[in-house]
Each structure stands twice: as structure tokens, then as C-alpha cells.
Length: 410
Image 1 (cartoon, rainbow, N blue to C red):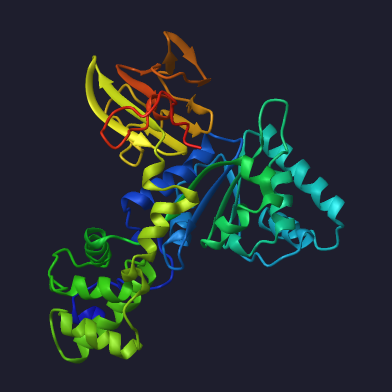
Image 2 (tube, rainbow, N blue to C red):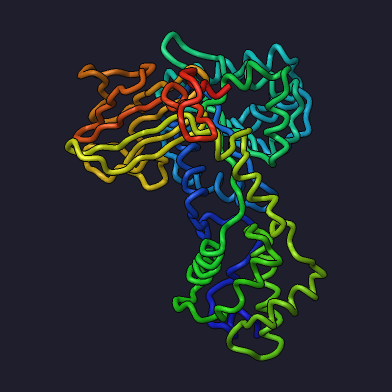
């Protein structure tokens, strides 16, 4: 008799092998997936998703792939310690070719012709590179060149790079400046917080056949957080071992003592996430801090202010899906309706192929740089844009205005 039978489960709930059926959509995982889905309607740039080892990147990619429609053709390259020629061979192999006796120029020609043929037949092509932190700068530059393959209308290759945090450091290299300019969206997966951790455990148990939330005693979760640090793979390992410990003692419920027994079995110490390092990673991903907000967006409905949010440099997606940075629950708004791109010069609004369009100053636009005070209309809703760098004024110690020089954020 196994613990699966003992605890009345249908299967092991905490296996380490990626399984889309067990995906738990935390807010940040849902947002990362939304960014990957953006490749469907944004064909002119990369999407980069990074995360710690065991944060769920591969499972996320598999879930994304299972939901692609029939008009998509995709390749997944996960062996990434390759030369440029080997990388091109790996990509072509994924697309069904046998390119191993070809020179680099022939490989590029094969891939170019394949992409053009797929476009002509109405197919969209997606290239996903997992474990991208192992790519050399030469291969990354080759990927940038591939992204430039286009028809007279649009790019024909959509690219997603997924990897560990070192990928961010590599991409920040001055020698990859052109590649960085091609990155459309990027997101870092941090650890699960305390409430998400419990939801994650309960979710996996439910998928495995345990409908009631009664297998793990509430006192377990603090201990799980202490030793697994909110990292899904570590949570799986610890919970699976705890189930074995409880099963060995013929218990029907896993208690905190079983978590500690599992920790001893595994030889673990308190997770480094409890020192605050992962919180810091989440806050400073791509160089942003809490004090770097430069844009304020006021959401209005029928002239009444609904919410006010501020944002740092980067991209802000607006739509009716809850994973958006600006969430508008309305039938007049598309799932991912528009995006705001905040840079050193201000903010650009761009329509993401929405159903009802985006309007600025009563004119429908596809893409437009905003001025402070501009109103962006989405159906019955308005976004009022404020550039905080133009409105901020330094204060003296008495609370008055020190001078009239605006804070540019530089």
C-alpha cells in the first residue's frame, strides 16, 4: 500500500516532473503567462521570463504550449550550451528538418524559407528557448538576427526566452544593447507568498483527488515556508517527503512535526529566502525600485475616478483580464486591450489589437506618445496620464517649495 492509497489520493500530488494539469496560477504566474501570450498579437519583439530554479518556468511554458491554437507552429530548445551553428541545427530539428550536414549559411537559408512558407500558409511560428541563461552572447546575437526575418508586412518569428536570473545580467551587457532594444516584455517570477503557498499545496492536493482541505494541518504551512522559501519545486519535495513520513507513522493528517521530520530526512536548513533576498529580487527586477515611479494613471468610468496607480519604467498592460497591471472589469474592454510603455521620454500608449480600439483626443490611434494630462479612452473608460517627473517639486525642510526645477528622475 502506498501513501497515495492511504491518503485517498488518485495520484502523487507533488511530483517534480512538470505537469500542466497541476499548474497553480498565482498572480505573478498568470501575469508571466499573459506576457507569453502577448507573442500572439505582438510579433515585433522578444518576451523574456526569468525565475529562480524551481519557480515553475518550464511548467508555465508547457501550459502555454498546450493552449496554442492550430495555426501555430512552435519549436522548444532547452539544450542551450551550443555554438551558433549547433543552435540553428537544434531549431531546425525541432521544426522537422535533418540539418546536420549543412553549413551555417545553408541553415539560415533553410530557416528563412521555412518561416516565409509558414507565413504564406497562414501559420504563426513561435520559438521558445528554455534555460536561456546558458546561451552565449554569440548565440543571443544570432537570435536577434533571426527575429529580423520579415515579410513586407510583419516579423514572422515570435520568440520567448526563459531562464534563471543570470539571464538578466547577460542581457544587460553593453555588447547586447541591440538585443535589449528588441525585448518587448519581461517578467521575473519570484517565490510564492504565505497565502499563495497554502493555495498552491491545496490546489495540487485537489488535482490529485483530495477535495477537502484537511490533509495538511494549518500549522504545517509556516514550517513549509521556513524551509522551502516559497519555491514550488522545494515545496513539492518537502511536502512529498512529509507525506511519506506521516504515512510511515500511520497518520491520517500531516502535522508540523512531520514537516520537521521531512526536513531532517532531507538534511535541509532554513531557506535563504527568509533573509529577504528574494523579496529584494522581486522589487529590483531589471533595476526598478519602489521609489522610481514616474507615471501616475487615473482610471475613470463615466467621469468618476475608480482608482489611481503609479508605475516605474517598463510596460503596463491594460485589460479586463485580472492578470493585467491595470484591470478594468468591463465588456467594452478586451482581455489585453492596450499597453503603456514608460521610458525616459515619458509614456507611449499602444493598441493591442483590441475590439473597440484606443482613442486619444477623440482620435483612434494604434500607437502614440502621450503628453501630461492626456486622456486615453477605452470603451466607456478613461485613463488619465500624469508624468510625475513634470509635476514633482523638491521640498525644503520646512515643507515649502525649494525651487521651481522639476524632478526629471535622472
